[in-house]
Length: 301
Image 1 (cartoon, rainbow, N blue to C red):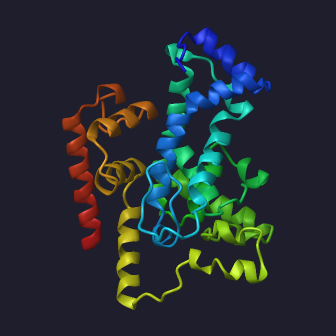
Image 2: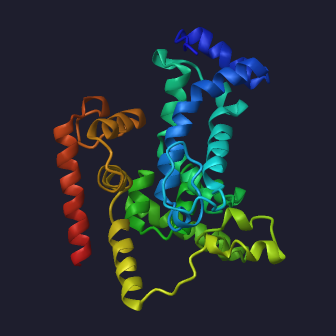
């Protein structure tokens, strides 16, 4: 299908799809497909873990070495379906306005490459379905973000950086959230999320026991546990942008141009006084070296 980039026609297409027009919905789904296919492979592989050895991968570019007669992994198709619903739902399409002559593809691409989208996917993937209570949201614009950060056990410095609050403002909001939950005997809402198996959702009895392989059951050595916790604490001392850059360039081995494109789509600057659109490869590599240095210092503390 050849995409028509005329913003007016793209807006009309989005509106018709939001109103339930089947042909328009199919066209929007085709526009979103390459973005969803790429992000499904990217996110799913990142958290594949032992599944790659137990199940046959359903991604467009399969990973893992499971036996040919192994059961098909459900996460790839399920992730695709979740992303399609998130990116192409009516309320999302109704917000598309074609600003700066951005096409519908640009709009979907920008959302799919945003940190909030990634966090929503992780909420779904790992069963983090806890909704922010209304009385917490009423504490301020950043209250919901701080609530989720507290559930993730983020340190106060990281909470302040990710929400653009001062340390004092972040501490005050954290204290108020704890106070509100304590008054209502709901401090348990801050318990960190647990990973759940897709195979176990809605199941039970013997059928559920057949899929216990989805969750790791071997005991780790104490030293390995301590080392992992030490790394987690050091990693948490980096801000969200540093984590994103290191994860993309080192863990996922993405090309610098792809990382720059994602930062521009998010309008995230990595150098004071330099807009995201003006950031170049040299600045990105310098930022990566600084982030690695900070991580090294944190590990040596």
